[in-house]
Amino acid sequence: MENAQTADARQQRGHIKMKKEEFEFALLEGEGETREKTSEKIIALIKQDSEISAEKLSRELGISSRAVEMQLAKLKEKGILKRIGPDKGGYREIMKGYK
Image (cartoon, rainbow, N blue to C red; front, side):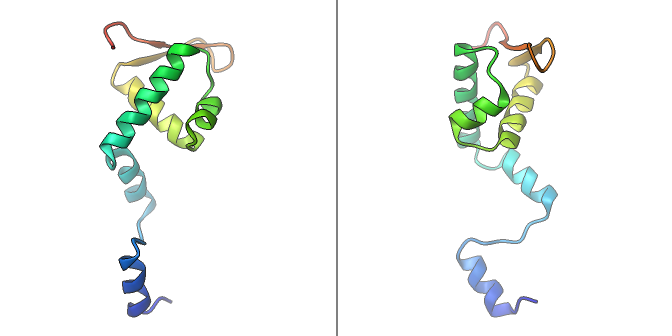
C-alpha cells in the first residue's frame, strides 16, 4: 500500500493513477495537436500506399498498433477515410474533398 508521501512524490514527477476508461479518454481527447499531426502523417502514408497495413503504419510512425487503430477509427468516424474490401487484400480510400 502506498503512503501519502510516496503518492505525493509520484504526483510531483507526473505519475498519476488513472482508470482504464480515463486513460483511453485521455488518449483520444488529450494532446489535440499531437493527435492531429499523427492523423496527418497517417493520411500522408495512405496517400503513398493505399494498401498499407495498420502494423506497417505503426512501425513507420513509431506508435502502438492500438494507437493506429484508434486514429483510423477517428478518421473513419469523421468521414475522411473509408476501408474498401477485406482486411487482407483491401485498401483505404481518402474521401474526396479532403486536402
